[in-house]
Length: 210
Image (cartoon, rainbow, N blue to C red; front, side, top):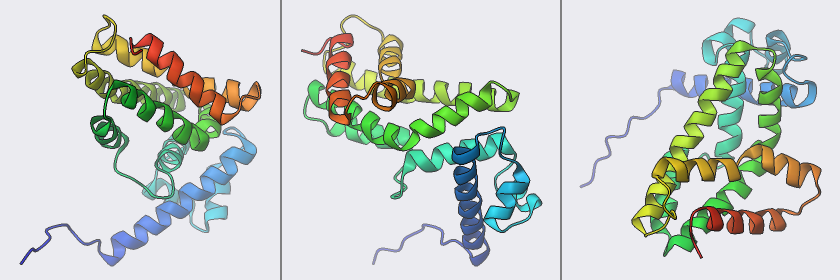
């Protein structure tokens, strides 16, 4: 008989998770509506129906709220496995190098549709808050590490056009930057389909995939 060893959350842990979700949802609503500067911890507490101290205990300060907001938007309603593991699984399941590019293009369309507005708030916050700026740098570095996994997978399939894994990751990072999505789809009027087609062509050209 199979017996799972996965820990079952206690009632207190489950309640804490619900409270954290309420706080992050309230912060998301206010940050997107009023911006980073225009949102106070007190306003988040009032909307979430909790005390200010509960926010600090469950999530942290404003920069931490913004980081949690990005995590929530990136994971989406289904809350999949961590992005690094998620991307590794998708990339390895691809039939060929072109399939890996499809995985990347699909992921950028999927995740930027949920996070582009959050990144806009992060850019705003980074200009006025040192902790938010540090968080932005850390998140960009995290994205670069995640894309190195895809670059390594492409190398194993005979691609990268003479680039190192780090250079391949940098190319993926630059082409798949959320700011490009904001400018092209949000500002220049590109359709999502046109953006995805551009991603496939740009990534394929940069990474040596016909």
